[in-house]
Amino acid sequence: MKLVFATHNEHKLNEVQRMLPKEITLLTLDEIGCFEDIPETSNTIEGNAIQKALYIKEKYGYDTFADDTGLEVVALDNAPGVYSARYAGEAKDNEANIDLLLANMKDKQERQAQFKTIFALCLGEDLHTFEGIVRGEITHERKGEGGFGYDAVFLPEGYADTFAQMSADQKNSISHRGRALQKLTAFLREVEIKK
Ligand code: IMP
Image (cartoon, rainbow, N blue to C red; front, side):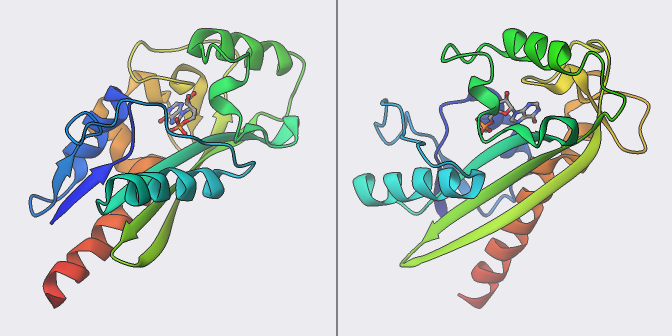
């Protein structure tokens, strides 16, 4: 089965590629000739994931999956949420986003947060969604060099290391995206078996 993963983010592409079963051939946006930004104008995580998958399916005709992720921080009324990438402005600067988050969390005792990922899959005429959540807390300072986005300040529940201190495999095995992708993968395996 050939599927497009609707992302221009090289890091996510690699992360997802490692986790997909061999039966699935991943097509990148470059490979299908899509070089433009894909619109994501919804005010929900789920809405954005669906919008991105539908955009590729309708414009390029390929079965497609897309994801959208948000960091929801309890003490900030679930901000930055769907605006996680642009928290500190349109430049989508990860370091500026972390600086702003740490500043807004400076005096907060309540540090609970979660990452939420939704994968939307357009397969044939059908649309399916898969959710993955990982709970944890926001640290007081950056820890670790790996990963991307808010990884350096997110400590998953039950672990002593932030996502940025973990290996890619360890992060993937417990992460929001990993969990949502496991559900997507299980679904795709079922579809393949029934063929
Ligand atoms: P996207 O919807 O996957 O592009 O994610 C939106 C934003 O959430 C990104 O720009 C990152 O700041 C953040 N983000 C998404 N996934 C992760 C992750 O696995 N670790 C840390 N931050 C993430």
